[in-house]
Amino acid sequence: MTRGADDPWRVIDTGLRSAAENIALNRALLEAHQAGEAPHTLRFLRFQPAALLGFHQHVKQELRLDYCRQHDISIQRRITGGGAIFFDPAQLGWELYLHKNVFKTSDLSVIAARVCNAAAIALQRLGIDAQFRPRNDIEVDGRKISGTGGAFDGDSILYQGTLLLNFDVERMLRVLRIPMEKLTDKAIDSARDRVVNLSELLGMIPDLEEIKQNFVEVFASEFGVGFKPDNELTETEHSRYQHALAEIDTEEWVFQHDRALTESPTLEAVYRSKGGILRVNLKLDLRRQRIAQVWFHGDFFVHPRRTIPDLEAALKDIPVKEVESCISDFFRQRQVDMLLLRAADFTAAVREALRSCDTELTSV
Image (cartoon, rainbow, N blue to C red; front, side, top):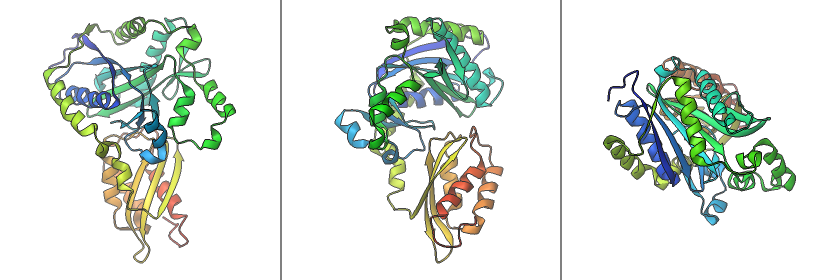
């Protein structure tokens, strides 16, 4: 499909779906757009109750599996990075599938500011004082009403946002793996103070069609385009969707990073960087003073997605003293988008894990 500069963009509403279906649609629409098989698209979506992990996260470290199973909350892994979130029908999702040339930049902080400022205007039309808060939130009087994030696939970008309609904060806290002693009434009230729902601000939930129309009109104005409603996937999108769903709606997809850690790595650490939380699990060959295997996971954004598995492979069986140079060489030889994450953060995370070992190997 050849996209002309004056061609209308598509607006599609895929309705209320399971988490697996929504994630499969993410991949299908993004792949089709990257292949030139689909137009620039604005998608609206909603989820049946689901706990969603960032692509690089570990299920058992991030979520309360027993609670999710007891309350029929599905667990699913996104195709994008970031942290674990809880989704239910009391949120409205919106997504843009665009070519990076639309923004004339690959800087996600610049893209986030443009998209979020436009989304804030769409919400202002409802009578609330919504404002963009860097790096990627929309707030009202300091309280978050919409979280967003973006990821590249080649020259295409998927930029996603959520809008809190009547969100249950306490339920979210019980889904995420937060120590039970922190789930006090005071802690729950504190969490509620940091977010706000449309229903709280307006005393009711506006008609969803009105909300969506505001987004359509504001994005049309922001990008100087027209929108064409079309709720049917293209033939190639549907084929890609069926293929993606067959892979994503499985425990192999959801628990892929957990199973990599069943070999019981001997060392682990949590490193907090400006680009997100970086967790490292590491098996150490003490006799040979080498890294036997390392796994990285957390709530960070990295593109291409294969970067992390490639880095883990590059670090396998190397001398500990060569870790820093190996990581530096790895990123110097590749073009990788990581937002605020840096190569030095991976070195620092490994060093932090090694500190728990009573040897002289703490100098990486």
